Amino acid sequence: MKYIAVTGGVVSGLGKGVTISSMGRMLQASGVKVTAIKIDPYLNVDAGTMSPFEHGEVFVLADGGESDLDLGNYERFLGITLTSDHNITTGKVYRKVILAERKGDYLGKTVQVVPHITDCIQDWIERVAQIPVDPSGQVAEVCLIEVGGTVGDIESSVFLEALRQFQFRVGFENFCLCFVSLVPVLSDEQKTKPTQHGVRDLRSLGLSPQVIFCRSTEPLLDATKQKISLFCHVPASNVLSVHDVSNVYFVPSLLKSQNLHMILQEELQFGRSLIPGLTSWTVMAKSIETATQEVTIALIGKYNGLQDSYLSVIKALRHASIACHVRLNLEWVEASSLESDTAEGHAEAWDKVKAAQGVIIPGGFGSRGWEGKIIAANYCRENKVPLLGVCLGFQAIVVEYCRNVLFWEKADSTEFDENTAHPVVIFMPEIDKETMGGTMRLGARNTKFTHKYEDGSMSTAQVLYGGKEIISERHRHRYEVNPEKVEAVHSNGLLLVGRDESGERMEIAELPRAVHPFYIGCQFHPEFLSRPLAPSPPFHGLILAAAGQLDDYLKKNMK
Ligand code: GLN
Image 1 (cartoon, helix red, strand yellow):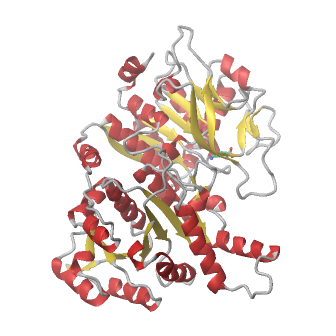
Image 2 (tube, helix red, strand yellow):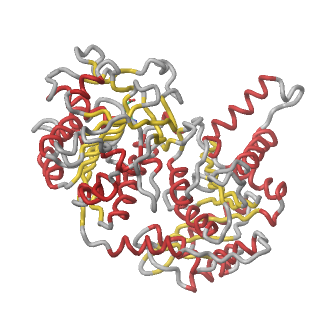
């Protein structure tokens, strides 16, 4: 196993994840199997209890792990399936060591950060690197390790010390350290000082980077590369320019154009030539540039202050737009602004919804904006505007239908009104009310398509899923549509076309094609499985409908 560890300096949010994913993509394009580990130096065991406002979205893994959103970037870019163990946090490492200490595993010893915590980190990395992450079931050849945070943080120092020791454990020929830095431009001059300081911090910890990736707005000048080379103890050829490009899918070829494959071939002694073939990826990146038709989608959210809160949703919309060859124009709408005419930004919010060709109501927790989501669902249903509701958005679709079509005026979710006369969305019986971390219905579960139209044709959702009878998607919820109300909703026209394998839990609802062009809700989160070249079916459906391409698509694909 060869390891490429990537640390970052100067500031966070540099695009370390994109740089690493692109490096992985480039290696895969050279026939190298890769896996990825993300290290998060915080004390939370996982990201499940962290606010999306503070930390961006919680990415849900197939095994139900609630992880940092970078694991989503790896899965999307590299087409791999990671496990919760691929996200190492300080909380997880300390928990493991402390539990072992209580069991008596270290009997007689003083348990210390060095060597016990650092050994635990190294063992963890070695073990997880061996887990197969693609359908071939084979172990990867290269493991990418991203160290979150920036060099110099107190939190990350124990992980950097573990990596310093790790070089000796696995051999220097199997370990390559990279550093992602920022090169700001001031008065037209590319400034190298922040990079110099970052590398100096790293070297004071006994680590010396072999490759430096410089994030900048413009391509790095040769003189800048020379200067960084001189001060940071790396050859100028190993200082790479990762300047802004029009879309992130160009980054793998940007790295290839600066011979990163040859640098890694040498640093990691591959013993064979790496020749990246990135054609399909580059064709896709170029097709994004040539799309002319614009499609406007309104996202009715509540964590709009930080766009990373909806990262996978946005990616899924983008992947679907690539497949439809349209340019996505995303409008952010605060759900609570739609509620009453005295709400802040009310008129603007409605202008955006009315101008959109499609609407998405994503998942969420808590009551703020809930009524706004229901109002948006109502608007889309009555005005035949394509709508996709995900998780809480799906629950809003069902509550809206019960209130306004079944005339159960007070219909609600017990998440927001515990004593409602019409509890149409209820707390799932198996969920723990006391412990919040890792106790939701989480991860990959199957959904069976259970509905055919009178003429025998499949539901729109099933056609979008390629006519499969059973699909697997990822979940993250505590509430569900009340099984006792399902038949009433279904027989009154909001069709429940997909259910869980017990047949009781409702997974997908849609309005008949004869009634509405596209109105679908799903309890699961399809966004987590969307890939640049394989868009998530419900998102694909939304963009097809918004772009006026859905009828043709259905005609072609309906069996
Ligand atoms: N709050 C809702 C539930 O727990 C929806 C969750 C979500 O959208 N992820 O069921």
